[in-house]
Figure 1 (cartoon, rainbow, N blue to C red):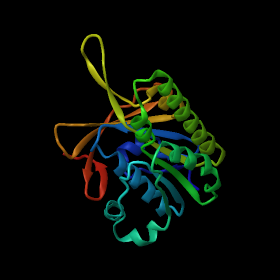
Figure 2: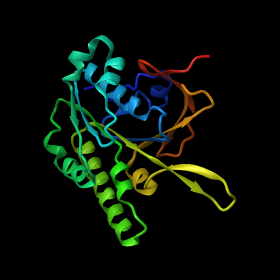
Figure 3: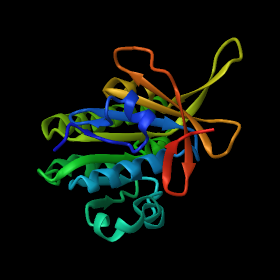
Length: 231
């Protein structure tokens, strides 16, 4: 299997040094309707085109066959058989699926997707500190399990997270991934996606663990998936 799975966007792949790298976890986070699931499906389609399977854990019920058909175009019927879809219905089921995941990751699996890993976690959060700490420990355990599988099986993993707004003392507001410390601790690379003044255009930042600055890129959300934005 090649060392990387391309996203299909030349400017983004250039910043990722070829795409999603085997043995690495890529965290994707951003506001709603910014193309996170489209990116996840697009990477799954590209993995299938390379002859490898994707295990897609759909925790938000946002994986639609129609969207995949738009992205896959005429290859839909052939490529659909290469994507194994799992749909846990709550945080406990999500834990069960991740705990059993290693049993399904054989030599023909090239990519693991979890979209989104923080959805059910966020639903169960409350003002109770003891409960919050317990949920944080469990989310950290799930990410540790995914990291171990990613490295041991030498596959690429794309983990999608929701975001939350953070207000600073000077009244500045910024968006951070839910459970940021946990998510960024385990991620080798992070991709943040932000809306722009144009509904079909997004700004994408790649954050490297080395803290090396990477110039943002602009992508377009089109019917056939994410594309490089050209004026």
